[in-house]
Length: 361
Image 1 (cartoon, one colour):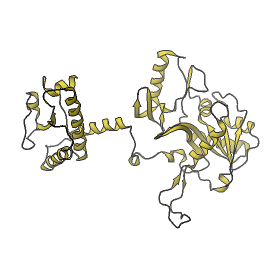
Image 2 (cartoon, rainbow, N blue to C red):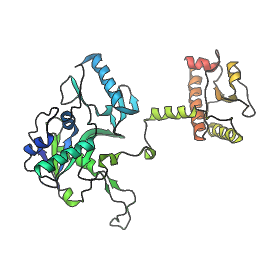
Image 3 (spheres, rainbow, N blue to C red):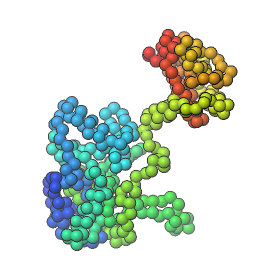
Image 4 (spheres, rainbow, N blue to C red):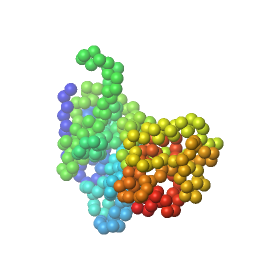
């Protein structure tokens, strides 16, 4: 396979309602069938009117941006200070939902296209019907990547070719059948186009020539085929968010008649699992709500009738290091309980108790 990457020069400023098919065909009369157009999502968004007005600076701008980000967010994946990694309504996981303030007036922000696959199909159809050009279209945007520094362009939308090249079932030169290999070829093409488009060169469209000549075009699924199913996503949350979700799960008791002997066994297994790592002097005690309200912490031989929670008693006397250890131990216990499939509810500790003092600090 021999590939060429060619810039499309002279696109110029794009505004709402502009005909991208006409602009690209005029700027690149040398386009030919089988080319892959890599189009920056920003000019697609501009032509589709996906711009919002915001103050030019100051706290009002930040407040407006936060409001827009919330509207574009389906769920928060991770949050550190002002940085928000979120999943958009499209399903993409991106910093700030792909909201962009570059290459646009300071009083505006650019949002992602509503349906990048549909935008790619519309552009491809326009070039085919009006200019008799049979090309594939990839709509690209810049993303960061987990565990790696730097940014790269990836595909948000695609038409005229498959997003993934599936090698499963093929045999390598050593006779091994490939079991898992699925290449995100549209992401690779998007990154290749970025090499020639740049961020400051005002070249929003690149052409990759030679790829489709060596493959079989397939329009199945669009770029949505790249979005990993939630059930297969092992890294769906940031570390802190995953821990918080685990604690929330562990803090929920299932509705029912009450704990069974199997529940009690699971609790004991959870406590045993962390027995070797808890701080000396930490005691985990099974108590019922009435005893908590009365400020009692008593050893129980088993899970009593009506028990509603597991309470960990903080070391006495209370000291800062002891409180830190107690908090860590309590976290370990709740995670161990969740691993055993048992929830726990931590009620507010009795006033004046060591645990109450811990919360106050």
